[in-house]
Image (cartoon, rainbow, N blue to C red):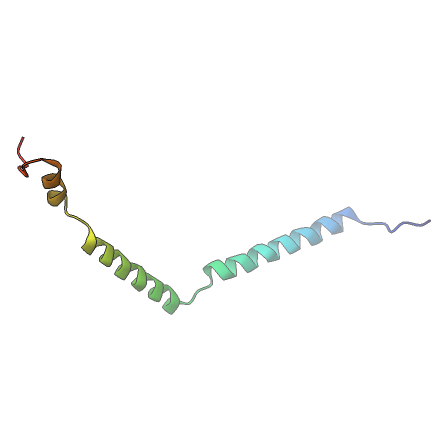
Length: 74
């Protein structure tokens, strides 16, 4: 009837190391991209934003639609 003794200090340190390694792995996945990958993503985002802006109605077009006769002066 002899139970295994556990040193809690060592257990806590081991758990902290494992948690730190897990966080480091997540960061490598999230932030570990090459410069060319970042540039490629930025270029895609820029093109998408341009396409969206091209389809946007201008503020003048929107204000003309708000008035029944199309006259912007009140």
